[in-house]
Each structure stands twice: as structure tokens, then as C-alpha cells.
Image (cartoon, rainbow, N blue to C red; front, side, top):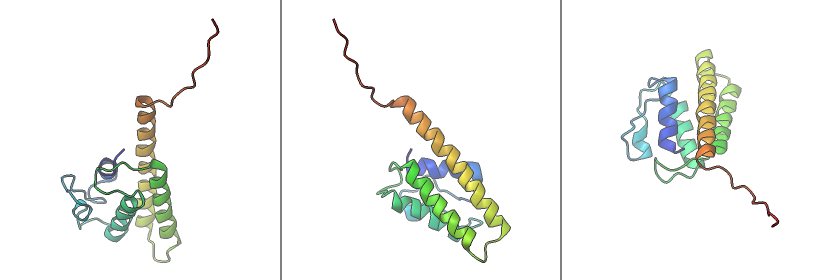
Length: 125
């Protein structure tokens, strides 16, 4: 799965008011709108996912495990913060749930398209 598809799918599930994506953007700085409900949090998270996956462009392939680790780290920071309100808790929990579903489906689809190589057995004649 690539970065753009992942974030766009997440925005579709969570809502454009939470993750306002410009799917026609060509650079990360134009990818998110400025009117997200939790703007600072989601901007930091999206850019962190982009950076930690070493994306050089919006259509770069992301690592599902690294992406979930990044999201979990952001959730942990939010939970530990003293000024986190109930809306932020609900948002980050929904975000984690939906991200997990999207990434698990991507892993499953990839395994169906590109099954792992199987070791050939030797047949005796």
C-alpha cells in the first residue's frame, strides 16, 4: 500500500473533517488541509508516518508494521499528555482501529497477489 492511498482511505473512514486530504496534491506540504478538528495532532502524525517510512513522494510504498508502530507511538504520547480531552481520546482510538483494519486488508491482499515462495520438494523418479 502506498502513503497516499493509506491516508486517503483513513480520511474516508474517519471523515474529511478529521483528516482533510487533498488527493490531487503533489507534495506532502499540500496534502493536508488546515481545517482538521485536531489539526496539530493529525499534521504531526501524517508527516511522521511519511518521514519514518522514508517516503520521497506521496505514492511511496509504506511498511504496515512501521506505520502502526508510528501511530501507536503518537497515541501513547497523546494518552500521557495532561491536557488531552475526551474527543482526542476517541479520535485517536478510532484512528488506530481504522488504520489497523486498512493495513491488515492491505497485507492480506498483498499476500494473495504475491504469495511467499514455497520451497520445492524433490521428487524421486
